[in-house]
Length: 315
Image (cartoon, rainbow, N blue to C red):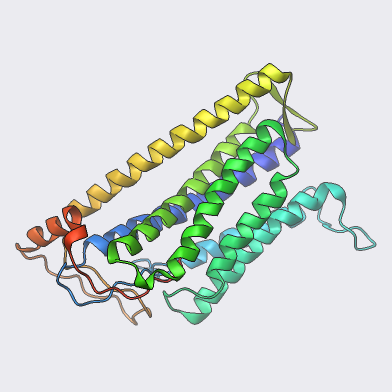
């Protein structure tokens, strides 16, 4: 039977990683589609939304975030025992990491709730705070880890820092050229998806038999430790290689997705996201001359002139 600590750490990292990867991929696809489908000569302003309405369930993205936040917060606060506090109100030392993780899920709940309440696709003021809370939690949580665990969480901090940096850059991107504004959205969405991917990698490391050679799960499956300096250096090198290859594969995936969307969605058929419409917009007819405009948007975007408004921060 697997140790309880290993099960909890593996499931929490994998489920959280899948949630963030799904959100990142959803945003990545929609941002590319919105950008390449705009006609080069269109006077419509380009606004990168904080979230995208789904075809049938308008607030599906925010509902998923709420459900994930509630599940994550509940599991972190009720893990190991139904009482997250002692009788005197203090926090047991072994429960401190769970309270740290709960902060991240709480900020996710606040963001999704505020976005639903305003019912707009523009960014609520809590968007940047969510990214900031994630980085804060990852940083303070990683200070307790050393060795191969420390390296795994250090790379997780790097991905979270990229999300925060691009979110802050997007907040003041109104004076940037259109292509640079789109690049900020692209990197932010890809960073969010990569953050989730690396969370899955960390979760897999806590599955018995998946730890690097010379390392094992100790203290009831809670800690991943390497036995000897040689084993530690080998494990750290393996983690470095995993991170490097994940970056390369993620870059290839983003480029492939961009080329696919360029071919599938013609220029001039894009929508401008702002306040959500009361009903779904009718699908635009595709004319033969759209092919030429699509080619210009995908291959010669740096020479086109769009009139874009300030891009909002997104999640």
